[in-house]
Image (cartoon, rainbow, N blue to C red; front, side, top):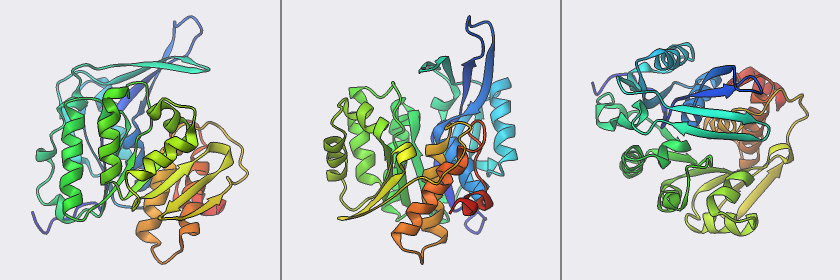
Length: 303
């Protein structure tokens, strides 16, 4: 298996189903395939990079939908594990403002086994992404942190997007710090900083995060205000391109995928170019409904 062809990019974490209320009285619901890390894997594939999602899904109707969507996205399905446990559901019972809870105390995602991934894949992979609620759900979280540590020791590039959700209580604090220490690239937003540090002093929270790993490249996204890229003591800022926003679902996932793509396949360019590409990828995701990963052509048009 040492000579097998494996993807250069892998995102490890959760794939789930969003159950979104579609009627004010809760009489109608809409099921949408999702998951932060799964979205990042699809976004990389849409940009043209060989990509895989490493995680576990159920074998029921929800799992079959996620499998088909992964296949349609062109992901390497050897990294997607299936088991007979129940599906992980995110119940979005209010959309404005969003309010949600998760169902899946013993669901399929928690059964993911990194040791069951294809033999030899670590010798070929160049970049592995972590984040989302997978790092707030045990025993999956501990397995993923351990996997990130092993990959870092092998020289594989690690990216991390905490993507704050209400599962990330004080119990998440040690994982936040450990993953920040392990990461080469970190993506964080204003909303993430407020939730993760339980403080409205965003500047102080950002400084604390950076103090844990001064060597990491940090993409700091601020929605319509654009984003900044921090490399060592240097930083660059850029605004968002003018677009007609359909919705913002998946924009953050697309932006970290855009940065990973640019740093991997456009290495000759300076940091501002990588920042502009990441912002354009996030903006392109906002031009379509749902977590629709942008194509490379769509991103280039916005540059």
